Length: 237
Ligand SMILES: Nc1ncnc2c1ncn2[C@@H]1O[C@H](COP(=O)(O)OP(=O)(O)O)[C@@H](O)[C@H]1O
Ligand SMILES: [Mg+2]
Image (cartoon, rainbow, N blue to C red; front, side, top):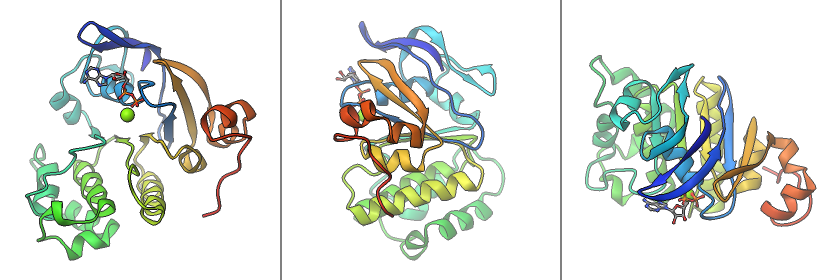
């Protein structure tokens, strides 16, 4: 997306945000609460009205395209909350994820269960009864049912224990290694940057810093302001 300006109703939130995700990349957006990270992600997905700027997918303009059409073009988005159907079973959730597919999606279902073994065991259980980490797996699995060209994840580790957080980050790496580019919004900035190809720091609806994950991680100014003080190294594990 390029020079995106827009917001909700008359309230302008994004004042010119530019970011890109190339094939093979994990790109992370960090920044303070309220900076516009989720809003930037929603703008890709046609969820707000842009007054200027452009969003493109493989060079094709998709600016202000409605969400259903963006999904059909291969962009899948996992919002931070309310990203599963709690009363449906795990399997029903995954099947819902495949709703626009007209072909046989069963092979894909097996791949998702192979990627998330705990879900295979609990396929007949209501998704709302699972742990936070497992619900996040359902949300990601549901999005992956469409074999997207790009996956957008808004704070997938929010509220998770360190163990599940690590697991989600390693799943993100696995999905990416299997060929899906990923755009990730994260509060756990150090861990996210340590797995990212590139990162962006957004502040007040504008780009503040950008660069390779390890460059941002070791940048004293970024460290001081956004990573809890001092230049930082990737945490162990
Ligand atoms: N649906 C909405 N309607 C109106 N304002 C919103 C909406 N969602 C977010 N905002 C406002 O937009 C600003 C940026 O929010 P958001 O993109 O969620 O920030 P971040 O994800 O960086 O924490 C905040 O001031 C927030 O209050
Ligand atoms: Mg947010």
